[in-house]
Each structure stands twice: as structure tokens, then as C-alpha cells.
Image 1: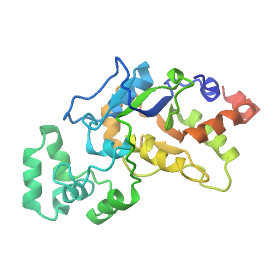
Image 2: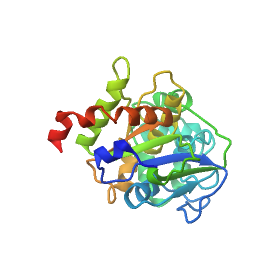
Image 3: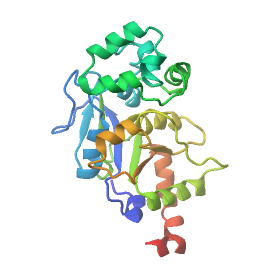
Image 4: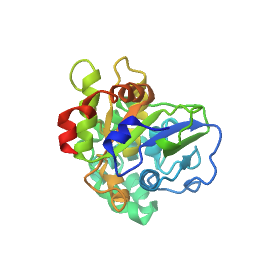
Length: 269
């Protein structure tokens, strides 16, 4: 489909649609079963090169993407379970409830993970806060469809209904999108910027907003781990702005005669 918003933004990157389906697209990028990887590296190929990527419950990349893609929650079961992740997301080994067991996890991890496990990603100040984030705060969905598909919005057909639309934008483009969203939403706090994985910021957080009476866009790509895997394709000066489908349609309608036809926006082009 054509996007009026994209025609005004003229972004360097394809807007990306995230869909769920029981049919696997042909010639799609897909992680190998059991292969640990950041799926945002494939998102980067979709937004930068117009590729299509597909994931399922055997090819999800990492435990965070299980939640991100709406396939349940893997943290209690993967890599030693919740005790491992509450330490990993906070201060590493010094936060571990059982340092001996945690050290065994480190010793058996792939080489590129050992230092991060030891030091911790430090996304949360305490293991208790980290556990509360993934056990209570993170919205969890488990959709029945077999596949999750990322593809350029321009390739979405009339028969398809995406769950999420993500724009990869620079500061000026982001300013336009936030202004556009604020022009139709009631109240303040027109956008949310949650803690979590970059895939969760275009996935499960957006799925949760789809259920809200007054849904908000989700600002993303603030996940430093994902940045490491994508910065050769997506420059540091870009973020994601993701919205549920129903909000996207509202924004598309307002884009007909909203901020993008204002002299303010025109003067900046």
C-alpha cells in the first residue's frame, strides 16, 4: 500500500509492517532454528533494502524476541530462567542469587555473550526491578498464527492487516510524526518510550497500545544491544516510531491536511 505519511516524510528507509500469518512468504530472510541472533539485524535489511523477514517459534533469534513478536514469554525458561535474566538485565554476576550457578551459565555461553553476562547489560538498577519488568510490566501476547512477518509497508496488500507499522526516522521526521500524533490525540504524553528490546518497541508494546482507548505511538531503537547489531545499516541518528494499525489509519487521514501541509513543515523541506 501507499502511505501518505511516507510521501510527506520522504524517509531514507522503508516503513516496515509487522504481520502475523499461517502462510510463510517465499524468499524471506529467517534465522536458523536454535541460532541466537538479534532479529533487528533482519529488520534493518527490511527497512534499508526492502527485504522480507519471517520468524516462528523455532526461529525467533533470542528470548526477548519471543515476547517482542507476540509468541509468549521465554525469560522463565531460556538460559537458566528468570534468575539468570534478572541478573543479566541488571548488574550481572554481582546481582546473581546463585553466583556459582550463574558462573556456569557464563561458562557455557557463546564467547560473545560471556562478558555481557558477567558485567550485566545494566538496563535495570537492581535484579528485583529487572524481574518486575519482564514478569509484570512487559506486555505479553501469544497469538495463534505460526509466523511473524516483517516487510516493507509498500508491499502490504488490501487483503492484509498489519499489527504494527514502524517508521525509521531522523530527528526532523520524528518531530513531524510526534506533531501529527499530538494533533489527533487528547491530553498530553502523546508518545511512549518504554524500556526493553528494540523488537519489543515495534512489537509487543505496540500490540498493547492497539487495545487502548487512546493508543500512543511507541518510540524505539533506544535498545543499545540492538544498535550494536544494526549501526552499519541504520545510522545512530535514527529512531523507530511504531504505531498499531488503527492509529496508523487515523494518522494517514490527518496527513491529508495536517501538519505536513503547514508552512512550518514546508519551510523545513
